Image 1 (cartoon, helix red, strand yellow):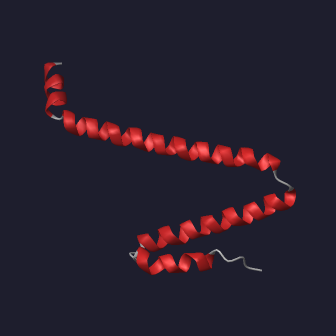
Image 2 (cartoon, one colour):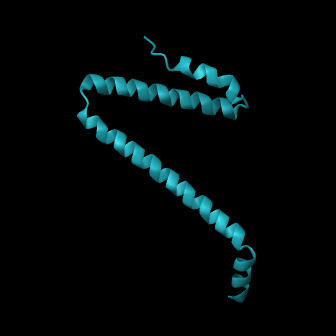
Length: 93
């Protein structure tokens, strides 16, 4: 048990920074979940036509995020892809 105490005190800074990172990840997930819950709650006041338009908008935003993230993982600079993102949001058909 004494060795465990020594190990914890010698690397307390690293342990605290790891704990803080985990805490912030949890906070980010909580904020995202709250945002989705608020969005879903707001749908009860919309007409069917408004829900359809909202669905298309959310789909377009999702596509933009998908393209942006995939370009980042392929090594493309965000400066190259950022001007293209608004064009991807244009309603098709």
